[in-house]
Image: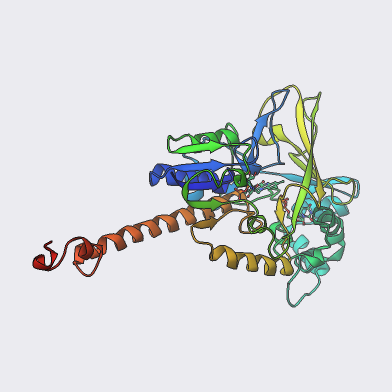
Length: 396
Ligand code: FAD
Ligand code: UDP
């Protein structure tokens, strides 16, 4: 009998397996339908011996000391600050838009103050920021929106930014200084030996059994367990009872090139040209030295593995219906990017999983206390049934 059946060996499932096994001495079975652990963060050495991320570039960044310290139990880190160039008007310019982006694009030599005024002069006044178009147009105006955001977003999501929640393009800031980092989080680093190695350490415990190439539907009737943690798509769990929740998918085209370097930056975005959104060169992320180089192209698709929940009001409403079902499903806990339909980064999923772990331990401590309480107080309880109060009455 397992205490927990965990569906999905990505961040959500693996963090919970690790905590429950090592901290609460629970017996855990973790299953994944894929042939590997680590979910979408899975990395591996390709046929040429270059470390690549199978499901696209994964760059770790967080402001949470707790999350960073927690993961540091399972890996050393390579400091890494991510940088992206965008191919716009035949030039490669820094993305997020910053002082150098504007100067290069328009052949200017503005300082920080001047570029702030320049962007203010372009920005449109939008009283209530609702959509992903509003976010950008209200900061940098329509022309820069068209050059950097409109077509990239249409390609990535199959939707116009005006149809997407503001949270999507809000992920990318606008700067008037020369900071060319993609993220400004306190902790920015890559696991020194890769994500998969980190997951192997997390799951290496006698209380944890890992079963790969296994859809949970195929084992659920045969393996006894007390509670389930589910990290797959929530609509699938409920047999699409209210209809399908949209997830955006991608096709990854991996290539190894017979040259030491390829791109001018770790990632180059192509907002306006090509069918792919971006190219990543892995050695730039991992720091690996190798005479060849490995890159990946990302082609967005409607069908395929679910990668991105689609932030739109109607989808949020549909998800809320599933959430009500999920909240009323006893002994099944839904966590992670797919199961809670949230466009979460890795650190947010780790934080969500740690929070659920805390809730589960509090719940089981309460259960222990509740079971112990009658014995302590001596009030009406199981004890009463076992030991008759009036010894006389209890005699056969
Ligand atoms: P997943 O990693 O999706 O794990 C869920 C697992 O459940 C999967 O392995 C799946 O096979 C399994 N599963 C589903 N259904 C079943 C079933 N029926 N039976 C058995 N197993 C099942 N985050 C960052 O912080 N930085 C980045 O740079 C970054 N880049 C990204 C790039 C791309 C292209 C994508 C798609 C995501 C990126 N992310 C990034 C987000 C990151 O991948 C997620 O936050 C994180 O991996 C989510 O973990 P999870 O455990 O919730 O889900
Ligand atoms: N985006 C864009 N142009 C860019 C980069 C991002 O329009 O050059 C928009 C796009 O809608 C994208 C969103 O901003 O989906 C969030 O970008 P991020 O880099 O965070 O996407 P992710 O890495 O999660 O795919």
